[in-house]
Length: 105
Image (cartoon, rainbow, N blue to C red):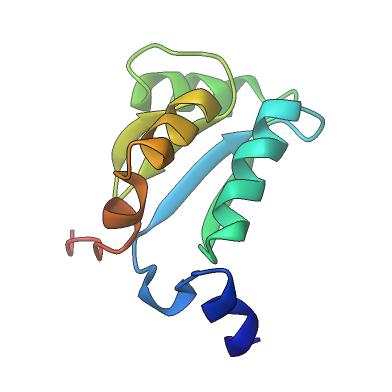
């Protein structure tokens, strides 16, 4: 696996951020966002909010009123949705965020 990681320029051992993602099970954007995180070797906490109104309200509060899924947080910082995550990756800004360890609460 290390050979494959080096070949693909993946560095999962450097991904130290606390990542949280709110999803619906069948949402294609949620699946796409999780695929990027998995590709990078990121461990994340997933909150599946299908049909859970209270969880959706909590997500919206954390996401500055945004109610669409996915909503992604890195080290408790709201990143946005799938398009926002991919935009950060294209700009070269995602990996540095993922390599930053969460501050103790």
